[in-house]
Amino acid sequence: MRVWALPLALIALAACVTYSVAQRRSAEPPEIVPMRPVSVDPVVLAKRLVSMQAGWPRSRKFDCARIKCVALTFDDGPGEHTGRLLDLLRARDVRATFFVIGQMVAADKGGLITRRIVEDGHEIGNHSWSHPPLAALSHEAVRRELKHTEDIVEQVTGVRMRVMRPPYGSTDDDVAAETRREGLAQILWNVDTFDWRDRVAAKVAKRAGEAKPGSIVLLHDIHRSTVDAVPAMLDTLTKKGYTFVTVSELYGKTPLPGRTYISR
Image (tube, rainbow, N blue to C red; front, top):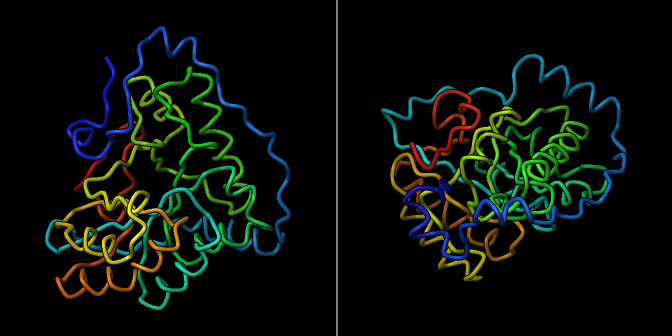
């Protein structure tokens, strides 16, 4: 039986469709561009590996059962606007979770932005290599999409990711099984800002500002308008008494591999 992001499908996944077993088996796997080595400063990587051994991401303790927490998540990068977003978050001492696409990491010259995501204390997650609907693919194609991205992120940052987000929220029992094998929890969302559709900063900020305690907010750092919305978004949620946390901090521990999370 195919599972489409539980009740979330009714409100946020209108573009997704359910695929039959026959379609899954006959689906052509996406073409994956061979991964080329990324030039990484060995000194920087050595420091990251030492930090990783001490525990990553850097743990901050929040009891989100008692305080108002919200997890901001950014998909599809790193892109041309991600650096500015990181500047805005750093200025406010805000941590978020970034679900990166492998091809975008490969295009990140020297891996500078990808490494900065980790070094600034944000959580980094797997958003596949080429952004296909995973439930449409064969088991092997799903594995390749996840593994290629895991490998390049670890090569660039020294970090092995523990969370993933299926593109379009496209998941089912078979995708869950593959994520379990790869040690990845599936992170969906319960607040969709529709920033991919409505490229208006004020609209995006308003929708994000309607988050409830324990919400996971879906955003995309590849859009200028989304980054433009961040200051107002942070102001609104801060005035409402929210603490900004990563997905793992929202749950107080690393989410369980293969399990699907929508909100706290």
